[in-house]
Length: 415
Ligand SMILES: Nc1ncnc2c1ncn2[C@@H]1O[C@H](COP(=O)(O)OP(=O)(O)OP(=O)(O)O)[C@@H](O)[C@H]1O
Ligand SMILES: [Mg+2]
Image 1 (spheres, rainbow, N blue to C red):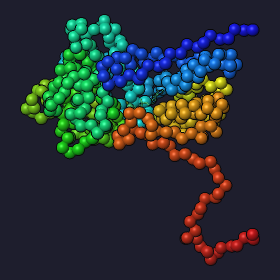
Image 2 (cartoon, helix red, strand yellow):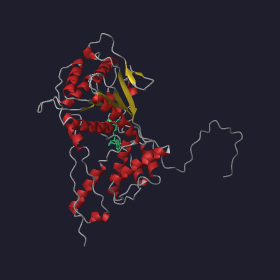
Image 3 (cartoon, rainbow, N blue to C red):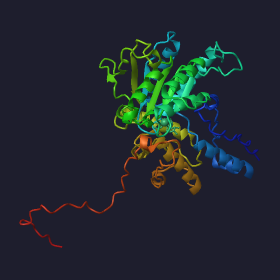
Image 4 (cartoon, rainbow, N blue to C red):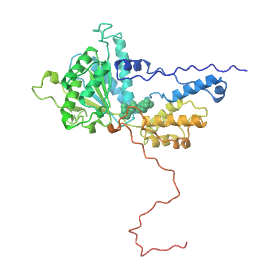
C-alpha cells in the first residue's frame, strides 16, 4: 500500500494589518507575500488523509480562496510603471522643491488601492535596502524611524483637518487642539523627520468640498505638495470631485497645474517654491472585452485566478474556455474586485454543494454582493455599480405599444 501523502502544512494567516499606522504598514509590507496556498490535491489524495488532516486541508483551501494574489494586468502595469518612475525620481531629488504629484483615478473596486500600495511597498523595500534599513540621520531607538512611505486613508466625511490628523495618526502623533495651518506644519515636520518620500492619500474623493472649506482643501493640497515627498492622490473620479477645481489642464502634457499662490503669501503656506504644483493623472480602468488583445488579457487574468482555485473536479480551462470568459466579463464588467467577489462566493458554493467546479449554471445562482465589502464609502462612489443582469430569455414576446396603430387596415387572421 502506498503511504498517504504528508499532512499539508497550514499556518492560519495573521490578523490583517492596519496599514494606516506606521507599524501596521510595516507588518503588511514585510508579510504581504507570505501566504502559501493549499497544495493541489486530487480527490483520492484527499480521501487518504486522516480526518484531522482533511479538516485542516479544508481550512487551508478556504483560506486560499479568500486570498487571491494580486496579478499584473495591462491597466495596473501602466499605473505601476508611471508610479514607480515618479517615486524614484521624486525620492532622488535633493533640493526641497515641489515634486510632481500623481492622481490615480478610477471606479470602485478596480484595484487602485492594492496596485498603489504594492508599488509603494516595493519602493520602500528597495529604498530601505539602499539606506541600510535606517534613515542615515536618525539615532537608533528614537522616534525618528525611517518611514519612506506614509499610507493614509481619508476618513469618511473627511474635512481638511481630519485628513491631516489621519496623517499624524500614521506617525502616532498627538494632534489635539491644532488649527489647520498648525496641523499642516506638524505633518511637514514629521514627513521631514521620518525621511518620508511618498505620501499616499487614498480615497481622497471622500473629502467633500463645501464652500467654506474650499480654501482649506486648496491649502491642504498645496501644503502636502510642498513637503519634499511625492504626493499620490487616489480616488474615484477625482476630476469630478472638485478637488482640482482651480487647476488647469496643461494641453502639452495633460497634467493638472495648480495656480500659484498669490504674491505675498507667507512661506509657511507654500510660497517658498517657485515651482508649479503639477499632478499627472492616470486612470485605472476595468478589463475591456472588445478587441482581441482585450479578450486575451482578460483570459490571461482568468488563467491566474483558475490556477489559484483548489476544487477537486475543476477541469483545466474551467474559467478560460467556451462561454465562460464572456460570461464572467458580462457579470463583472471586467472589474477585478467584482470578479474576485464572484469567484470567491462561487468557490464556496461549489464546495458546499459538492459540485467542486465552477460552471455558468452555478455562478448564475450567485448574486455579487458589494454591500459587505470592507472600508468602502458608498457616498464617495467606492461601491461599484453592478452590470445589469440579463435574465434568461423567456418565451414571452415583447409588449408593443399599439395606441398609434392604424386599425382601419387591420386584418384578422384566422385563429
Ligand atoms: N490586479 C489585481 N489582481 C487581482 N486582484 C486584484 C487586483 N487589483 C485588485 N484586486 C482585488 O480587487 C479588490 C478591490 O481592489 P482595491 O481595493 O484595490 O480597489 P479600489 O479601486 O481601491 O476600490 P475603492 O475605490 O472601492 O477603494 C481587492 O480585494 C483586490 O484584492
Ligand atoms: Mg481603494
